[in-house]
Length: 214
Image (cartoon, rainbow, N blue to C red; front, side, top):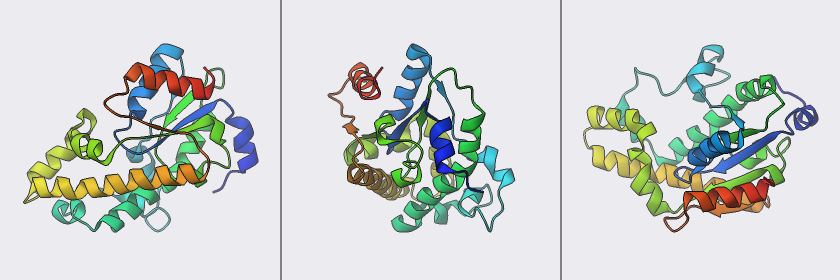
């Protein structure tokens, strides 16, 4: 299924997109938009969409699943894991956009989802998108130790032979994913904003609001 991009552009004029990589503040900013400005949001949920996906048409959406060999899964080559990350977001978008269209239009919507911008620029213009990113060092320091990634860390600690090495290897994929999205956003003229320890949450929020015109 493909929904006409011009129709999407017309119907999703109230959608603002926080693009970019991990540990860049997207989730924190989304919460502030919802709590302080009354925005709506839509959480991406792979498990919600998986029952409606066929393995041949949506191979990336089938993973991960409980029967995996976790040692092999977490220690796949970086390029292989990177391609899976890119593909699972693209496959999910077909379902995600339908959910967006079902949401009320009386309030703006803020979306927190890292994706190559060419997949959403046809219906989300760059003026309503911003790319948040952070340094490789911050990703290495934070990614696997975030509260919302506790389940991933528990699986690594329980089901891999060398958790420290697995985490180090996994960070390479997240860094590549973050950097490739940022480069693609720059190439497409999308505003970028770096989250660093020197940038407060309130200042980051102010700069994003300013870009979106709020």
